[in-house]
Length: 186
Image 1 (cartoon, helix red, strand yellow):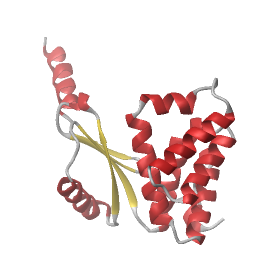
Image 2 (cartoon, rainbow, N blue to C red):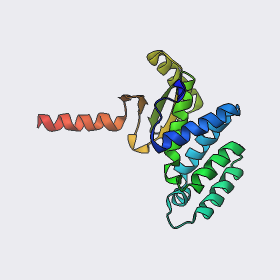
Image 3 (cartoon, helix red, strand yellow):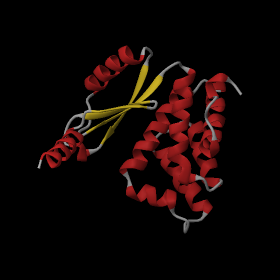
Image 4 (cartoon, rainbow, N blue to C red):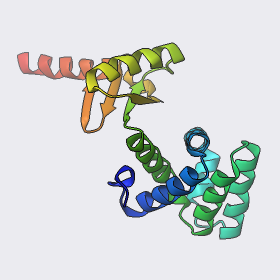
């Protein structure tokens, strides 16, 4: 096992490593990563797509057709479409988001990058993402690829997760801490 794929385990890891090997040999790592990020965003934004992915009622063929049509409509690379089709054919769509995450982690490790999840109350602009990336690069000491997520319940601020480290500067957490400290006073 090569050093860049070391650490990816389980079902999602095996699929991610296989896709990484195929994409690397075809010189399509960036395109596949972009396609997978698009797929992840579509899954997160569409309840209907999540139902297609999770439905035990839909036949294997229907899931393969649906995912194939989705990949084609989104203009995804043939390699990405074939991968998603194989996942559907093997009845593993329930683990697709985990496979995407594992692939992106393997890609980041192979490039010597760290991946940071940045959760904010509102969608960050590209300038804000670049600013966060620059600060994290200085703190971590390596290039950081930022994965922005939105959680409107945070009210303000953000939560940053890099590896096993987490910094929570969200307004929601600060209010909870204030509430707990006020209980202690009374």
